Amino acid sequence: MDYKQMEQSLKAVSDETRMLILKYLSKEALCICEFTELLDMSQPAISQHMRKLKQAGWVCEEKRGRWTIWSLNEKHGLFGVLTTLLTMLPEPERTVASLVAEGKKVDCS
Amino acid sequence: MDYKQMEQSLKAVSDETRMLILKYLSKEALCICEFTELLDMSQPAISQHMRKLKQAGWVCEEKRGRWTIWSLNEKHGLFGVLTTLLTMLPEPERTVASLVAEGKKVDCS
DNA sequence: TTATTATATAAGCAATTACTTATGTATACA
DNA sequence: TGTATACATAAGTAATTGCTTATATAATAA
Image (tube, rainbow over the protein chains, first blue to last red):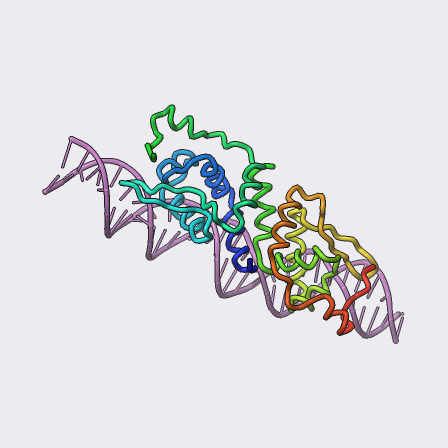
């Protein structure tokens, strides 16, 4: 892997918000509107983070109806490193389970 | 490890110049003036990169005479991840051996 | 002692980043 | 057919980054 590519990959991960997004995605695929709830951030802010992660090759998107479902790209050249890092991080306080409990979880399946 | 700490650690690595510095340091300890030759950059630019790496806990410094010898901190919580990353990167074109050949290598030992 | 060398650090500046608000588009639903 | 929902994207802005030049300090060499 060349220096510029690793730089782009690592820069995309080197942000607390995006680390949280990736931590959530390591458990299940989610859409933008769910992240706005989980992270209490605006929709454009989340979309821009997803764009950055996509440009670095970390995530895949799949349009389904109104929603765009985002998931981790397991074929990324540094996927192993990413999972090592994510397992070192604590579970976020706000859980997807709490979304379900509040009826805010979208049916992405 | 908490999110903020991992963010700082990864941000410090997410830079082509600092990735090169760490790649060189994975082979041997070096001082600022050698990096200015290896990377063809100004001394303040190198010093500022080293400061950033030090703040993130990636490097140790040891004053020896006029020089400050910099080395990797193997006790960093993500040292294993770092070495995995560094081994994926190609050797830099400018080698420490070429410094020696030109008589520009300082005796840091 | 004086000059040189190795380094740190401050101030200034252009580029980048991460948000905001505003707006456009496509899908689903009444 | 409208209307609401999910999302992308553009423009604007404050904060951060990575260089530059200038300068200070400490150790060595002449």
